[in-house]
Image (cartoon, rainbow over all chains, first blue to last red; front, side):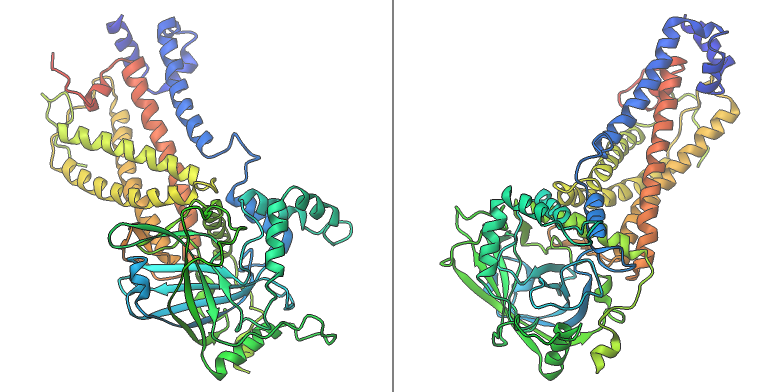
Length: 380
Length: 185
């Protein structure tokens, strides 16, 4: 039998296709032989099926980074070359002067006393890069710490003390609920009401956010890292932390009742004027969590009594349009962390990293259109 | 490829077989991680953190493997294979080697062009091999996907061809690369 098959093999060595085509007529109709041939096909297809399963193709309804980015595109439109969220922005740079007090919390090089160059980007939430500035819009600050050993720390913060959502699915569902209705061009309030009815954590977090009135501008806003992280010190001890930036510039309330419509870029213009007048500064504050403080829920603040450590001062002394500055082409991925820092179990973190990356990949290959905050806007 | 064929030898050398199965395990793992991570929100970060150093490990293993192959004696092809089949097998082998070297380099290059730090683990990171240029990143990112599918399809063809030869034609192809020692008869 073995000998016979080897002869058959010799006669039909031009591959499986020839064997399959001629199998009906030839001795290959031998059932054992055909069984093995079928087994080979099943094995190959089986391996392919495992990979198709891993790629999520059997589960087209699952929320993926691509579907998330599609959701942002449906909300804010597709604007060539711009971020799918926090599309409107301006680049800044400066330095972080570490005072060395963070070294007892984390072995990350950023906390060694000394000066570290910073690249940053101020932004407004939403997918429209030409949106008119409004006082109540969520303000963002992305920072890249260029560490002396070649590592980087990137963080993307916003000006609310907690986040309104605590899971990627909730984030996506709210995105869908706030999408403009094709009939009216406005979001359907009933959809938002239904969303809030099933998300008490969002209602609760919104109350906390509203109890911290917005400041007058980017320059006197506090910014919060929102998610919890782990810090590891040199001895291997880990502690849960959150971080925030406390402005040195004095707080002034946002003018939300003014009748005169401010300039379309008034928040950015005030930031530019402020930096050109004198460098803007913030204290980097690390809040240390305790055993029962949730690390997996960005809607819940930690108690006010938690220890806070001022680890250094951020100084931003240069501002530049996205059109001429590399910050446009940086993904402020919150999971670019140096040794000594690690993500917590907050499900938003991995999802943020995945969706930022998706947005970055999409916009990278697109033609770059002019930024609303143009080079001449920055110079005037 | 060298034509360093030892006619009395039934199997590839023990070191070559070790490299083969090591590469097979690493490449199937990284392909699985790659296809899963791009579709995942919850596990994206964990998987990327494995994918990056694993790709660099494969690059190192494949380069050492290629040098070792060049300096080793190879068993002859099974008698069942025609000259054309032999040249197809040799060409596909070379193609696989090329993919296994190019794919990690494209990954490393695309992270460089995106100006991501190329973190292996903790503080350990690689230097960038390309300048920060997002248009270049976009091209390389697409190429990384295309090469991954090509690598997977080439693997399937290789896997299918070996099964066909060893299981259907019973010509001992598999035993040439079997992880265990096969005695000459």
